[in-house]
Amino acid sequence: MYGAIEAGGTKFVCAVGDDELKIVDRVSFPTTKPAETLMKTINFFQQYDIKALGIGSFGPIDVNESSKTYGYVTSTPKEGWKDYDFLGVLKEDLDVPMYWTTDVNAAGYGEYQAGAAKDNQSCLYLTVGTGVGGGYINHGEILQGFTHPEMGHILLTKAPGDETKGCCAFHHDHCLEGLASGTAITTRTGKKGIELTSDDPNWEYVADYLAQACMSFTLTLSPEKIILGGGVMKQPQLLPKIKEKLLEKMNGYSTMPDIETYIQTPGLGDNAGVTGALYLAKIKTQEA
Image 1 (cartoon, rainbow, N blue to C red):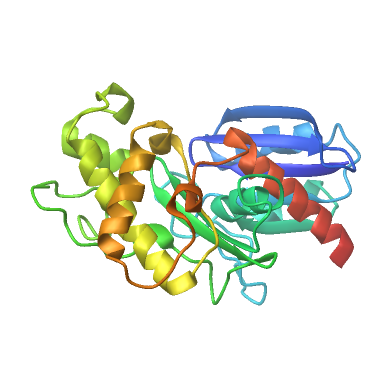
Image 2: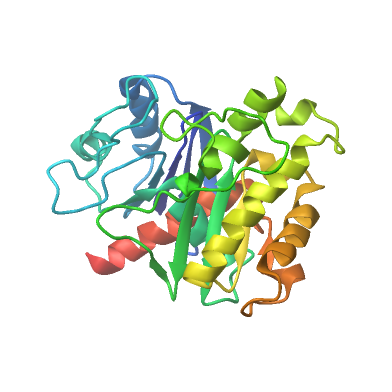
């Protein structure tokens, strides 16, 4: 058995999979105070004899293994979780190898192994929900430097007519998260995305900003596939708009895969994160 945690700022999803990584049990519960949330997590995994645990966590997190705060959630605005030793608390009660990464990296890895990018050598995964985050997988390796990328905070150009002040506490209306996230939609319209009609002008802005992001990542990382997940991307009218706007912005420059297959929504749906974490858990046993 292998264990997987998709630790989101809103909810935790915990799962166990067999040796073929087929999910055999799964639970989810709200992300509340750290001690309460991790107690539920530990209690779930203590029912099983797992070989390793893959963890994809909301962040920012410390992924630098030489750092004194490796395994910590760092500068998150989530109450109670700032500078919290997530990995250390798990290790006190679960004596197994653990793979520690971001939630978007885990989801991207799941899509790379078994989802929309399973036949590709590289993919970029962006989740567009309450916030925006991204991960890049290239030949089975997760992109990481001094820390993990923060793709949701790349700088963008305001779309003509968009007067929103943005929702990012750090960059306001200058970054992708501040302009295209679910929180940004509410800031701009006073409503949640699910409450808007499919022809609401807001979607033109969101599509423009996501197309800008796709252009930047196309030109800097050259992925074979871009996968756009998260609650905002469950609006079916968005994907065609993003593709159309990306072609307009690229304006014939450089080459990229066929637009119809280049940008997709997750093939694994809401299971991308836990599936990727299971694969990463299996990798950890091979490294140990």
